Picture 1: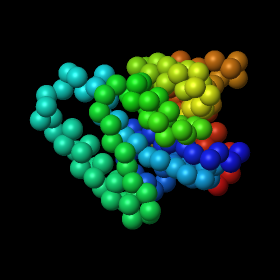
Picture 2: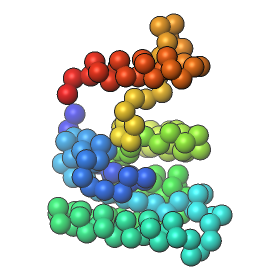
Picture 3: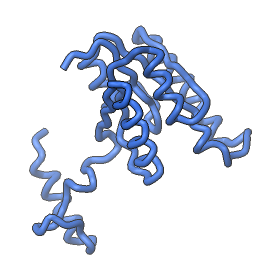
Picture 4: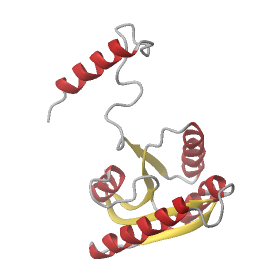
Length: 166
């Protein structure tokens, strides 16, 4: 699949090196844009001078510097990520948005909404496993159910890990 334009949505993982969504976008697209959204839905309850925000700001400056060194740059938006992402994808006329999977319940709902809104515009949303080794459905009991006891889960997890090719 070779798309003409893609948008990479940086969220928790603010690095250009070993970033699954960026990797897939670069492999499948002729032109790649990168964005971070200061999501007002998340940040509304935080103090304006929150040290976590200072950390994110510094991390974004480093990410932008690295992207510029590689020939790109970082677009930064402020507002509801649901709205900002869809509007930016439309403005840039991208074919797809790429992001690393976020496993938080509110993030899952947000991503489903963004994916549906992008699909309504004829754009794809691709999420990639990045910060975990196995997704929740990849290590199950022999009956295909989630484990309810840790030790059997741990043993199945280690067995699955050992079976993975390098």
